[in-house]
Image (cartoon, rainbow, N blue to C red; front, side, top):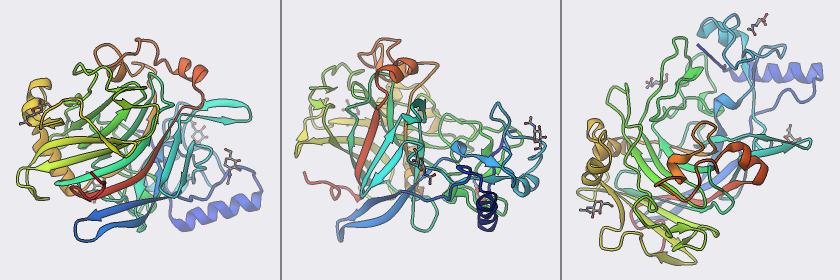
Length: 405
Ligand SMILES: *[C@@H]1O[C@H](CO)[C@@H](O)[C@H](O)[C@H]1NC(C)=O
Ligand SMILES: *[C@@H]1O[C@H](CO)[C@@H](O)[C@H](O)[C@H]1NC(C)=O
Ligand SMILES: *[C@@H]1O[C@H](CO)[C@@H](O)[C@H](O)[C@H]1NC(C)=O
Ligand SMILES: *[C@@H]1O[C@H](CO)[C@@H](O)[C@H](O)[C@H]1NC(C)=O
């Protein structure tokens, strides 16, 4: 069991007050979500701006007692004396607001910038933030993308081998698992799950006392750096016991198009560009069966030719998934993915690197041009301490409405 905790607004206010009274500097931060404008588009009404914001994941936060003792142990697990159960933990422990700048997350208008490393007092540390899109009502925004499309601009020119600037969808609970012991929930980034079935201190907002995994449907719209990329559906079993962890990812380099996603390539990753992902159904409606996940790129005001020439373009379909991913059909392949997209998923942004595998699955060997050791996080920190990803102009809605073709 491992936890972090959550608190009522009154408790949070009290904690802050105590802090202020005690005058302990730098120990308490109100939670202020960076605003990020996004747009929803329809054929009938065009694009309408929404007042959305972003929230840092729960696990990145300080959880402490009323007198500012940590509620986690030195190894990062929850202190089981303070948190033997949900109710006691909620009474003893408080979760802190985040300093987004210090965590490497900034927004301006419709633009979000995320940095892998942060510099404080001359010391560089890895922050690797993961954040979620919040609606103005305090719950996660629900993106219902079946039969719809998602568009955004990205600048990943500073991401070297081994970095992963990611934009994806997870079928998290939209409240973040809000309950009587966790009234903040989505407001403090609770409830993360994905198709790798993570085991975390809290599960769906509740103290995870039995170390349970939390699997959910995941659609990786973009996992990328300046030399490699993939988009990958990861459907899960209906009972959430397991998922298609590998997935049938589309990676142009892996398919033999080695100068497609590249600096100076067909799609020039040294400059910003637009990514449109269409979730196409068998009957063209938003309730049909997902049959195709189609990718379109635009750069310098023009549509970039797809890597695969011909009418299908760069697309993922169930026939292909069955060929390249022996687990796809076991989890219902695109049909399952489409059902999750139809129910609504949470938009996740992250920037990360990988201490154990150096992100080789994404950009090394047959997947990309990087050496097997180039993605060592220590190398990245030494050579690219300012590596970051910029996402902007995020829109979703009816097919054909989020961009000009
Ligand atoms: C757990 O918290 C209690 C009360 O603050 C403290 O005495 C104890 O040392 C903590 N245990 C660990 C392992 O941190
Ligand atoms: C947030 O952290 C930055 C350093 O990254 C610091 O300059 C700023 O004062 C902090 N803000 C608050 C409210 O603590
Ligand atoms: C997550 O928590 C919410 C709020 O308690 C609940 O409605 C929902 O069913 C939970 N979901 C899962 C998968 O446990
Ligand atoms: C299915 O996807 C593959 C891989 O992108 C593509 O080669 C094939 O043409 C697609 N099939 C159809 C019917 O679109």
